[in-house]
Figure 1 (spheres, rainbow, N blue to C red):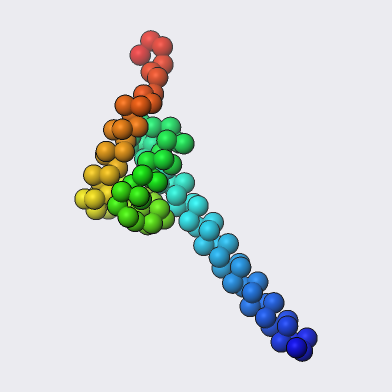
Figure 2 (figure 1 turned 135 degrees about the vertical axis):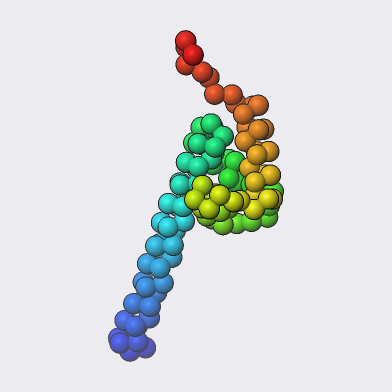
Length: 107
């Protein structure tokens, strides 16, 4: 194999890896934003919000990234697919029964 062909293959592989890493960073940011929406909606802790998103994904048979995108758009668009809304409400309700957030003293 010539040096040029090997260099071209290396460059192509590196470009693909960079594209995958960029996609992973974007996915992570969207999931983080969705966690924030779930925290605001359900009054749950961040680690619990992550569990809620995973549960929604499993119950609706939808990829986690897609669930996160729907949840992030929800406050702006004012709509959430019925199956996702139902799964979100059920998951938050279950979580809040198991792990109620303690109220500050004096409230």
